[in-house]
Length: 405
Image 1 (tube, one colour):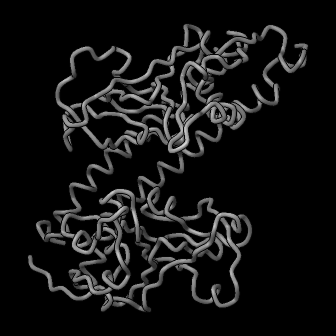
Image 2 (cartoon, one colour; image 1 turned 60 degrees about the vertical axis):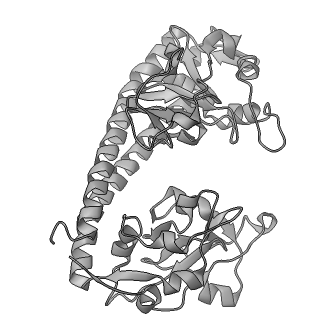
Image 3 (cartoon, rainbow, N blue to C red; image 1 turned 45 degrees about the horizontal axis):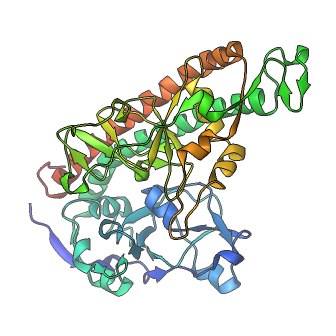
């Protein structure tokens, strides 16, 4: 079915707006501000933690977002990121937005903002036509306003948005459940191993911060930390049997399952530890060093500059995960990094650090408490990937009219 097109600004309720320019030195107090990090991490922006800035009276009147506002990335280090669109969903307090973002507020009587967020995510989006490529890829608000977009009847927009939002609602609910599960495991870890209020602690003597029966060892005595394989990036494909896990996949306590490169054949000489599976621990060694995540899913291969954390026999990987993601050790590890243009981390230096190892009985007990939590987290993460696949299969077919609504 062929839809009519109009300039995007025809749908604007008010003129589009670029956000505020606030240097980092003046941030910290005041009102929440959506930045590029929130935009790229969240297609639907809700009540999440953000940086804060002060606003004057005029800015408070003109530079806040409302539920339903669309935000577009003006710049991106990669071509695909320029013009990325997210929608503001939940407003828990006044929120502004930074200068790298463009705010668009649509006329609700003719334009459903959820629909247009999906529209700009679909293959029929014309966004690429206005992206310019320099040191960074980018779009201009003036070009966005003149961009010809499809205009469907509002009833059709609503139906398409409702269908696709059902998937995103389920994904969001699962994410909230994951956050609650992770929070419960983190609280248990801190109670037992940071506050030292573990079962039976009343009867255990503590000397120099180490309970009786616990050992001070080197991380290298407890874990192997082999690095990944040096793949030839020229062999990468946009899809394939095996996903290549790089530092981009290792987010802060989060595994990103979508890879930037894939291959169909395992290269000769690939070490066995580079085959990844659900439950494997990874640490980033370049850029934002020291980030740790747990893999979920199958058919992943480990690239260089990412280390795999392999616990020795008898050491709980769940205890290891919460220890490596604990703020104290994380900061110590970050301080080991070197480099000017880009930070690098040596796995051998990490292995040289001291590590307090509780008794095996306590580790086993912690494992018994938390293994079920992580199994549920794995299940929810995998369910979300299937929901995303189903949504993304529907998206182009709904947008081009192949599936009538």
